[in-house]
Length: 270
Ligand code: OAD
Image 1 (tube, rainbow, N blue to C red):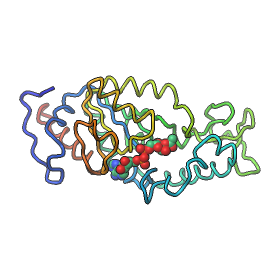
Image 2 (cartoon, protein in one colour; image 1 turned 60 degrees about the vertical axis):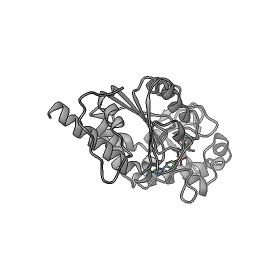
Image 3 (tube, rainbow, N blue to C red; image 1 turned 90 degrees about the vertical axis):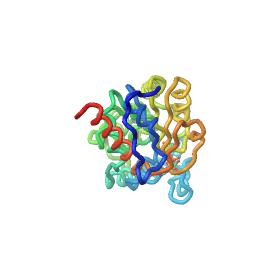
Image 4 (cartoon, rainbow, N blue to C red; image 1 turned 120 degrees about the horizontal axis):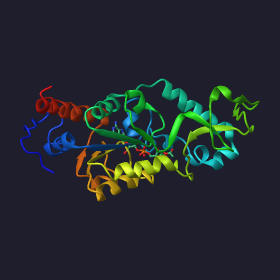
């Protein structure tokens, strides 16, 4: 797809060559944009990623002890407390420039859908209006037996320091997806539908190793989308990306958006 009469895109001093004219052109004319995000997009907010060798959560904690249904059955207090700690961590954080840039881009393109593996809710807080949460949300709880969302205020505290379902008495658990569990069906169906209908697909801050999220870019590419990866590190998805931007999302995304918005001003005379 080429854009006739496009003004030249000047080189940005701090992002030379990385943001190509082709990407900006495509974003300018895109009807539908998808951004698949992972823990890296929240790293600059102070939330640790999972697989960083030094600071990643899975370097310090064993996921099989904390993020599986079996772990919860074995030691619900340990799992509950770990998520309470993560909730406290999240409460002390704010969206960063990357979250805000995506929200701003969403106001400039006809449709921008954020598909996130994150459970922190920071995209919504930054103002993104269409967010598909593949792995649930840290703030919600559900009944571990009935699988229905329960408001914390209505739950019954237990002697063990947990919360129980007001309907059936089973423990509440965070409404997040654990290893070995299926993703919410509606979210997954919407994610695949959006991925196969978009013009530009961003892969931002994800190691691209957890399925089925990691397959979304491949489906998007097969359906004709232009793939852009933003990540300081190489990932298994780098090889299929049309543009790879090696940098932090909180630095790269605002540059892209500035240029898309700037060009729109030129074209639309705003
Ligand atoms: P990972 O921890 O696997 O990967 C984070 C990625 O973010 C890495 O590729 C980093 O290089 C990159 N990164 C770090 N800082 C960045 C920054 N400032 N800007 C951009 N990228 C940056 O996290 P996810 O891919 O999200 O699932 O992990 C996927 C799933 O695995 C998670 O949702 C979680 C985890 O186990 C469940 O808990 C079910």
